[in-house]
Image 1 (cartoon, rainbow, N blue to C red):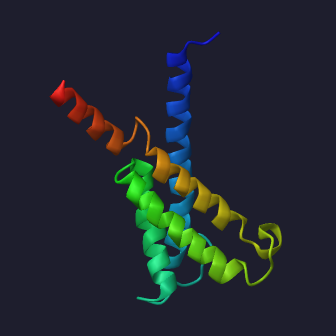
Image 2 (image 1 turned 30 degrees about the vertical axis):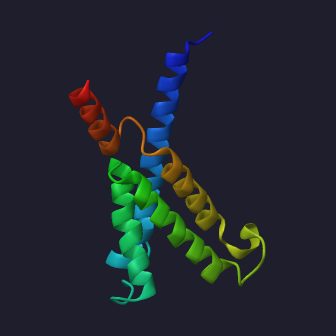
Length: 137
């Protein structure tokens, strides 16, 4: 049977892996909107709601990838996804599978998970926390 320490290490690994993968996936949505790449023909108009969404998706996703300010950024991104779901998807149909809102729901709940749990030991936040702990010890 694996020791508690080994299970904890595995949990840290997968928390950080999920944070990085979700952040990279999210950044692609922002890159599409801001830079007209990855299948999008033109960038969204400057200072519109979609432009602000693109800013949050790209730069917020990058902060999530590196794990800097993870909790507050994840909380803001969860709100962004809730707004996206209620504005763009829910009016089409009640169920996410029918209204195309599965990604918005999944991102929203993963960002809430990160807001509650933090970025993990292998994030910049985790490294800063360890450095502070070592200074006080």
